[in-house]
Length: 278
Ligand code: C2E
Ligand code: CA
Ligand code: CA
Ligand code: CA
Image 1 (cartoon, helix red, strand yellow):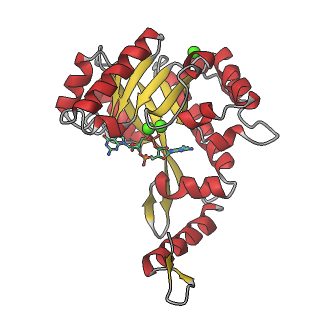
Image 2: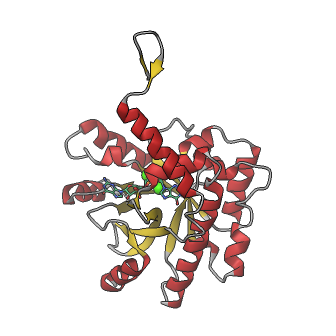
Image 3: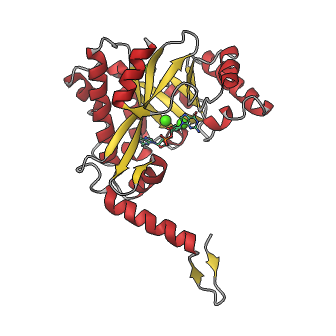
């Protein structure tokens, strides 16, 4: 909250002023980030715990700013969402992913799936910009089941007819759906079946203290059991230690993603990583 000055006026502390100035600068430059080719998609491998194979990855956007260097999405995605830029960015990411899948296909990695983060705002607006995604994949010769759509629980909570229709449209077209940051929101569990969800991604806040916090361990186990009862697979994110991997393996978790396996990396490095892993 803003501090109240002596005369009752609100004033910004220097750090708040700095932060708001930074946001302004980011917003100004973000408009031209796509046309200037400053955005880049990184890929983080997702390991199948039971087989040890890697046939999935998450696409994570980065911004290579000419002066400020690499900017993480946490800094600019919220600004893009606030100022109506997220739809263009989301479309751009999706096209990059489709082209990456085409490359993987050419290397015979036909079973490979890439998951894409989709902002709730991309589901809004009169022109549904997501509707053409299955068609786009088909047109570019990419199998539709190679794409996983990552949404957050919040979207399901406020799911109106349009959201429901779009999710089912994805599902009918063989695209898969994952719930990101599972356990941190308030979604009603009944939605998991209603919308043909395929994966739950256990939020990394549960995974970080898995070995030390018995509550986090119990919750994660409960999520795995529930997911499997409903026919869903579980991806644990933020896995950094061997002990966490071991605990997740023991409780029957299906996939892990995290620095223990690899950090998100640029497409060329990712291709080399896969080569080495095969
Ligand atoms: P997220 O979807 O929950 O992505 C996982 C985040 O955890 C990524 O941060 C990833 O780099 C980080 N991470 C992965 N493994 C580990 C680990 O072992 N330890 C720790 N400490 N962190 C790990 P990143 O790439 O900075 O992305 C942050 C968030 O930005 C994402 O969270 C997602 O919500 C959003 N985001 C990223 N790319 C996109 C995009 O293309 N579109 C939209 N709408 N949002 C995106
Ligand atoms: Ca995600
Ligand atoms: Ca499905
Ligand atoms: Ca997440």
